[in-house]
Length: 356
Ligand code: ADP
Ligand code: MG
Image 1 (cartoon, rainbow, N blue to C red):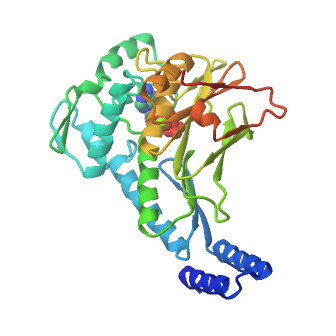
Image 2: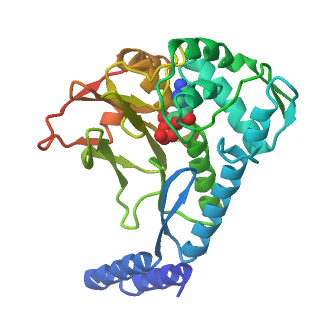
């Protein structure tokens, strides 16, 4: 029986048994059971990360397959490690010629450039040469010398990514774009709209920590997303309740390597060429746009707590939760409204910041 039939029956039942609370309860229960039967789940690996899907819909399995296909399509365009991707071709043509790109690549480059400019350069789509020098997109990691970084930093100016009528030109040889800090967020928005287009009203999707919740859980409660404890992969610091929102976390604990006893992570401060180090362990952004949340989680992690809060105060349109090295969990006013802090045994303390 499909959901429409169930709903029609439920409606008929409600009319027939008006005044009969027991029957009404039974009907409600039948509806909830039906929704549970329509719960489809899958896990896959793409874009260098684990993706999980929970979709409540009678065609859920097929819808998830369609979503995975869309993600692969994006990966094939945007990946910096796939040699034949559009982004790889664009990078190979740096300093030589302009490349015509598809709509998805264009949208990401344009949004990445504009949003990045808004963050004062903390988010930089042209950071790739430096990320490569650290080995994050290569087989081996290593700490580059200051001379190497000094030579590469002039190649990371996003203004030298020239966008013109669906063609893109990287002005200097050696330049390269890296959409690693924005592509998963965009993919989550694309998946969300694909799901909604197929009539899905209840789903939660995680693309490597880029979470998007559609509607609510089948029982009407909000979706809950755990705020990871950056110091312990098996623990969390609280729960974020969402409805039709994206939740994205960036943190140094997600990808890093160790050399001579020191940890180096994958989020680079474009001002120095070094992994951003300013007392933060993670930044989580809650927003209607997965793409914006992805950019801002990376950018605010680079900015640090003080400048990150200032950016939030001046721009709005999103909420944020910061976890600091000193053990503080700090939520903006709107994030506080949907966040339940759980200190438990992990020594974190919590406070909220008002917009002021
Ligand atoms: P993750 O990809 O682990 O979810 P982020 O969204 O924070 O984490 O993106 C980090 C990735 O973005 C890095 O692996 C690198 O490819 C790229 N990157 C690193 N530093 C920056 C930066 N300052 N601006 C834009 N992209 C960056
Ligand atoms: Mg990001």
